Image: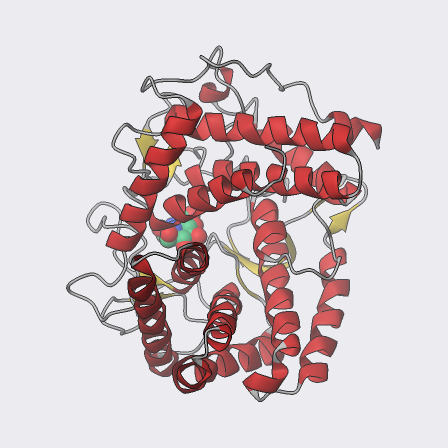
Amino acid sequence: MIRFFLFIGFSLALNAHAADPHGLTLDQWIQQQTADSIHSMLANMSPADGIPGSVIASPENDAIPYYFHWVRDAALTNLTLLHLLEMTGGPEQDGYKQKLFDFASFSALIQTTAGLGEPKFYVTGQPYTGPWARPQNDGPALRAITLMQFMNWLIAHQEGDSARKTVVPVIQKDLLYVRDHWRDPSYDLWEEVKGDHFYTRMVQRRALLEGARMAGPLGLDGPQLAAQANLMSNEILKHWDATRGYFVATLNWTDGLDYKASNLDASFVLGILHGHTDDGFLPYTDSRVLQTVQKVIDAFKPLYGVNAFAGVPGVAIGRYVEDRYAGENFNGGNPWVLLTAAMSQYLNRAALEFRMSGNSRSARQYKDLADEMILRVKYHAPADGIFSEQIDRNTGFMTSARDLTWSHTEVLEALAARAADGLR
Ligand code: NOJ
Ligand code: NOJ
């Protein structure tokens, strides 16, 4: 146990001039990057040639076709937008709120043009009909999570009527889909493996539990949703592999990519973050969670050239060690901005949980590790603040899809967690 608290040997002493390619202090960079990432995120929402409420994954559309509305990316983006709405009292409020209504309307439209497990749509609302990894059943769960939080915000601001008209019907469909289909095998968030996935189950579970808590205004049967969520908890715990000492990504493989021998995946960290709901299930400081996170860091540290750069703190994190996807080709995996940022967010949340439980020593350690991860993101961040999907594993420069919306939102969430950890 102690071993996990001490974490691992990569921890470099933090010093003020490490990783400072633009001559900015960490605080200066955070301020600038926050503005840049909000700007990119908003620019990728409701594109001029699309229906309001659509969100492009990235403006790239040629070599790497990312100019589409992915249900997952769009739901996560709108969740971050909602967090911004909650934090701002300024004149942006109305614009953010309108965008969330647009997202709800666009979602209502695409719920009618294809099955709910359909992952990817044109910005005009038609489903992408080429060959693809489908269904992806994390999408409806994530969309329900986002829209339920928006519904709560609206109710708290005396706009329950508009919530009932535009938002509630979308949530109802998504939750009933999750309730009835969570046992079906689906493709994972990386659109590669068909089976039962830790990430997908975590967000499905959260959606149903939060749906159960709001069953009244949603007009749904709360105990019935909660019962399914509880069954899901048992299935999630089956991902714990005591021999390997980590939660494996996929059980009951049925199709798709078959070379992920380790079954260890950084989507675990996303599952813990995006699936978190305050019911005490798999808390950030659960020993098995800490152990899995450590395995993820240990796996990526020796894998990428960038992680051997002298004097650069933290560890750049990729999807899984066997990954071959580099954007335009399959010549080897790279670290991802969003996963390195998510690691920082996770470490800050663990630090806060340690602190609440009175373990201030571990809290401090995790806090420092979280900052090393954010310094790592800063090191690779381009001066114009525009993140791509990936970081070249050897050169450290941005690569793959340019200006990836999800990179920006995950960085914003990491910076918000850093500010909210109560340790500064
Ligand atoms: C293969 C990648 O591994 C996957 O993650 C991606 O979503 C698709 N190609 C589409 O770009
Ligand atoms: C590839 C990622 O694997 C997937 O999760 C994502 O939805 C798409 N890119 C679009 O960003």
